[in-house]
Length: 207
Image (cartoon, rainbow, N blue to C red; front, side, top):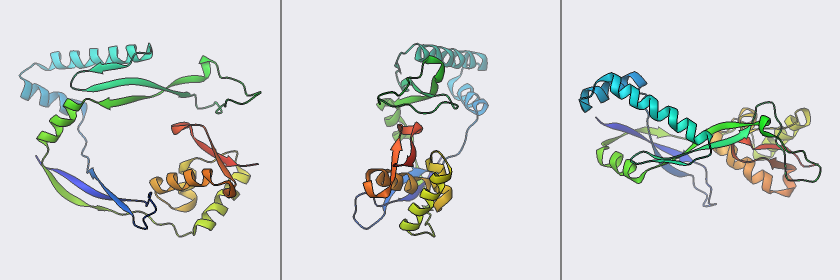
């Protein structure tokens, strides 16, 4: 079966004056039941055996990640848990006088997954691709100066700003908004600085 791919426009990250392009799959979604049914049909195993095996792997994978293991499954990849703060907690920092959060304020927020090369190569061998269209960047109706001004006004009324807030303020795509905020946080004249890391990153006024 053919898979469709999309040519995706991304911002100019290298200062060339031109936007860049990358390619991504136009995803279709397969349910758990449909996946099990295909395994039954193509693997010549009964459904209960497949479901039991998958449930056991899922349960044990969660257990060992919770115990701090990085788990490698041959033909699948390597998994380990990612930590972050609970939703009602404020990001702390390595600064004098800043309190440390104890274990009650920290939770597993995601799973880091690195695909096995064998899985990637197998998917590549099986792929049959056809073009499924283009995806262009969404442009903002505000100039960069106006966008920064809107961010300042937002932060004067709110304790912090995250990427989705900047997207809503400016009309930029999430990719462009993320990159623009990153550059603003590095520019001392912008008046905006970042706090936290990765999924926990947020932005405040530099006072």
